[in-house]
Amino acid sequence: MNFGSPRLHYRRCDSTNNRARELAADGFPAGTVVTADEQTAGKGRQGRSWTARWGKALLYSAILRPLAERHVVLPLAVPLAVAEAVEGLAPVECKVKWPNDLWIEGRKCAGVLIEGRPEDGWAVIGVGLNVAIEPEEFPEELRDSATSIGHDVEIEAALGVLNARLGEWVEAEPNDVIDAFGERDVLRGKRIKWGDGEGVAAGVDKAGNLLVETDSGETVSLGAGEVHLSASGGS
Ligand code: BTN
Image 1: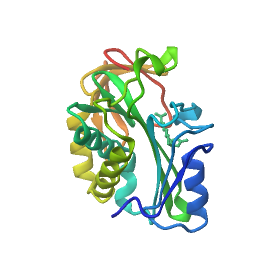
Image 2 (image 1 turned 60 degrees about the horizontal axis):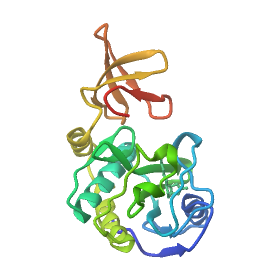
Image 3 (image 1 turned 90 degrees about the vertical axis):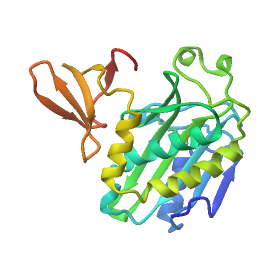
């Protein structure tokens, strides 16, 4: 499908996801994209906030509708689209960290927040992609863990490539999504901790859950909403 038309751009808004959700509820079509130079209340996963310097990140929300059965793997498909977009824009390698962070050389360059109203048949795909934020421009607490694409990439170029890659990945078959996710998965084979559990990450299942082999040989599956991971060997 095609993303990017219509496109609404704000110099400043609270959250592009909030704007896109309102548009979806008002009946805007599939493929509608909202962008902003700056957000005053950007949202991250699990109630966290998302900040980015004015004009230096792609702040992007797209409406997907109607939802189909294959979209059960949407939380895996969207990071794949972002990873391919990043690699299409600059000579970098972009990995995925379950559930939906994007990494360049061990640092986070993008995050994904999908908000849905399954009962209404739509979802909003939110992507925050650091394009040209300099290391010293990140808040101090993120300086060691965040990065940007760099390489003089322009935000409008990033928008075009993301629209195209997303258009392909939202159509993909779940098995292809899971295989491709496995090829970019930075957690696979790494020891991770969550709540009171510990084990070695062993890929994702068909529902997009993280599979973990515990020391007792049991395989457990973790849902993205349920766990806070602290990964040894990369987090
Ligand atoms: C995360 O890594 O926690 C997800 C971050 C998602 C941020 C993007 S920025 C554009 C869109 N609007 C929001 O309020 N959030 C998403």
